[in-house]
Image (cartoon, rainbow, N blue to C red; front, side, top):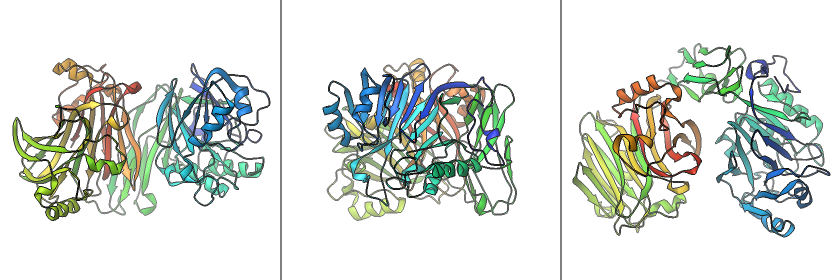
Length: 608
């Protein structure tokens, strides 16, 4: 490999984790500068910008920064003299809010952007997400200050710069290929072990310590961090080589089949497998909960007599001559299987004047009692600022309106609240003007949600299974709506009950709406992302940009099986996922590549 780790465990699992070919595609180079540079990092994107994070400690440096990202305003992370050395006349500086006043004063004429945790934006070709940065045990970096860490997607390699954080719960809600974690134990991590555990939380493939060697954190700490993680199968080093660390990806590895989540009874055998192709011979390394499994180096992972120790989230890294690619996660549950069903379907979109949010759903197996809701003002408690104030809910069969409601209280507050509680729906305030009805449905229906005064805003349509033990069940959800950015993204949610995974088809359709149905103003390049929601956290489970990437033939066969209309053009930019999803709560989101917007269709189908 181009950049050999400085530390390797005796088993040296690294040999199967990473490409050793000089043909691997390099998407950028990463530089760390500990100890003298504390948490300073430089990223040179191939064919793209040069990005610095928390540059300090430089006495000389080329003025080459296109962007400078600052996690917080402490002097060992935000240095106006050093920023002055590395910036160019048009350099953009991004900072958490507390650092902005000093930057404005010290860098007149410089573009300075304030960010808080939870934002997404692009810097040239690089997608950036801000995440929380704070202390739990110590008081040096309070959460209320809105300090940030950064996750940068450089050509498909996700790099996480943690800033001065402790190991915080949010680290289990996103993944990073490269984890840059602080070792200073006075103001950041409480111990080296905590930094090691954080790298495992992030499911990192590569871990590099920062913020060590000066006032806090020692070379011995850096060696302990590196050697401990190398023993767990991560590529690691105490600092990057002088010429930088090459960030490598493969554009030629393709998964025709990802590992599938499954539930097996205690003592039963389980098998996880993938079908992948690439350039030259493929090598494999399976990981469980982010840790490499010794000897698990083939396309199939056999687990004999599964027990509690085998429970976890599995993935495989497939490496060809051009670098590594990580599969989707597969969850193994070891319990007596309890098959479930879709018990809750919901869509969040935009009701625009006389154009309501329209959601379709299908039940099968007979009459199905349902709770159906149209939510507006109650969305404020979830941080939505532009929801419709007075929703009107209509349940339609074709052009016939079967149920109407503009005030949930007309069904009786006690009766409706009991129904909310029974299905696990969030409550409404006594004074809210949200809408809800109880209805029995057999077959297909549409739900229309608009504002009683035809105002434009975000709305939520929900369909809950009010009798989950009956033979009848929900099998399909779809919605056509405007897919925007931020709060205006087109989002569908669903819940799988029981503990047995369910195979699903999830689609985000844009171009086909124009070529097949004559719709104008469509989302020209949709992407669909599926998130698993657990304990208030949302983790990316699967994603797709162009539907035929996994093979047009098998994907079109799934369309036919589900009863979905075809996508005959394999080059279209519509999006589709075939996933085996574990039981739990999910959200599917359709947005436009490059922050484009337009009309889109989101669909969720059960598959056999």
